[in-house]
Image (tube, rainbow, N blue to C red; front, side, top):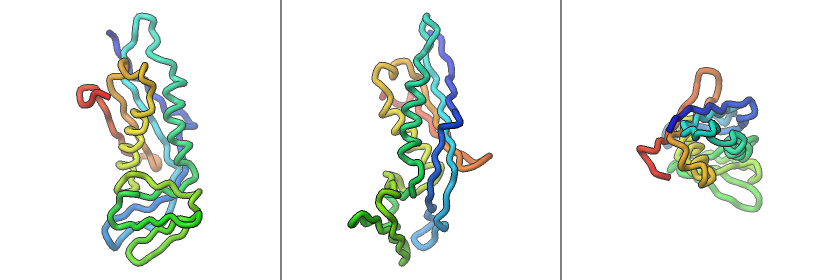
Length: 166
């Protein structure tokens, strides 16, 4: 069967979020934000009808993840140097003797060890693969997701059928 790469990188596929990167048990970046952009490339089989799938379905799943992360402070829930306490509608984030208190509705605790474009691209790829409808999965041969924190700075994570049978 023929195959093609479908590249989805719409203007709307983005999220604005605050974060800090942890460098060690005692050093981190200041809290700051980025306008992250997202691109996804699907290598897919093309059946005789000439249409691999409805692109709107793929875009919907990418956009849902963007929407969940948009206008949030992203915190690495698996970072051994950060203590996160949820109490009374607030989130207390403790690091190296410092404490930040934020409204819970503004925080997205992620199952990653650091908030970096590398970790975000792997998280995004995993969530995207899990959310894809079962009927699309047999046609998809590979997927790559790129998260950029600015022009010329991004990280790409890849999944391929040869590596994993989801």
